[in-house]
Image (cartoon, rainbow, N blue to C red; front, side, top):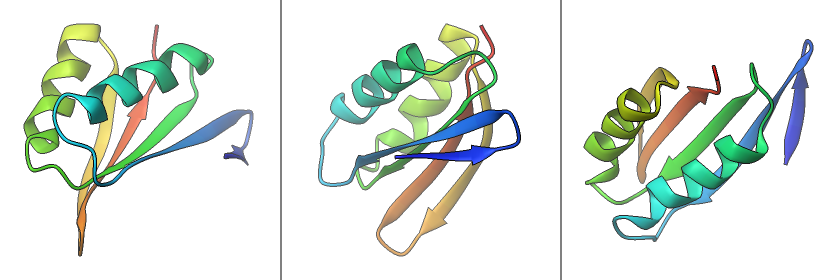
Length: 82
């Protein structure tokens, strides 16, 4: 699902129930499909995602805007910057 936010889109990725490394793989695919400046909102329940997403963003030089703990896991907001 894409929701307009000004000139950029927010791409929602539901990785709830997926185990490592699948949440990061789904994030990677979504970022690849997104345009530079778009946001990817990933939801994940795997505890490893809390660390893996931040490491992936650093390694891929993408911007992790926020991590929010939700009742059933975490929500990550990542901007494609390159």
